[in-house]
Length: 289
Image (cartoon, rainbow, N blue to C red; front, side):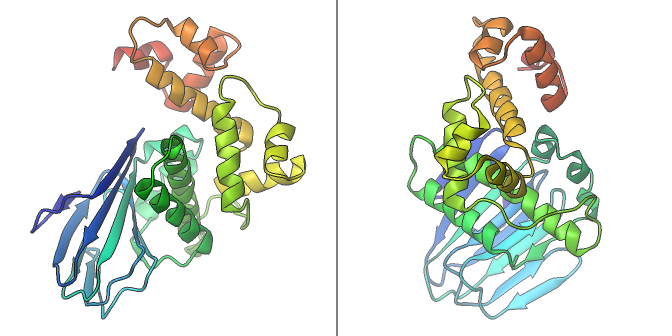
């Protein structure tokens, strides 16, 4: 992202695989003027709102507001221009800027959404309670980090992006296939993701994960897919591949050793899954590091 004037320094940051988060804090009467023109999808949360005039310019249109309501969400697709300007705010307020690379969607098997960016548009004031709750959870993790903060932020942000894109395409009638509302409550999703992360060295039974969130197996699988767009099995494979990518930075570890350490039954299975998710073989990926 590129700022105009003045230059703003985030109070908190988070960086993951193809994902980044920056939390900015502004005082009363502080002028905010920022340009966004990114290769990544941008999600903004203003948890406190802004009690002062605001201008949003997406290139195609300019929207002016007397104030911004608390928990306002802005979604700006990759490669789209967005200019935000706030003046004469009467309160201290925060802005959480989150970016996700489009490649993340392909890694999660969301090719149909990855290639539809030219059909997406900037949306100011996203009205979706589950998205608002997920972003509030991300804000809490960034402000009060724990040992699992990286897992929660990456998971919630990626899944929030999928939901935002699917809902936008559904509203415009361009959704490639059916989308079902509903899913896991935030605390259940968070607990399930934590359970999967701790079990990433093996393939946990679906009944184990379902029991951890106090749901019947069939109900859990259906709700997890509705919340994330992925089956629990597919999500676990993505987590294993991400762990393998980190381990490949160690030149002393062989690919076979990494494959078994990440829970794959053989190096050939590891190679097939890795190439399907990343788009290149483990050997080629490692040589590009």
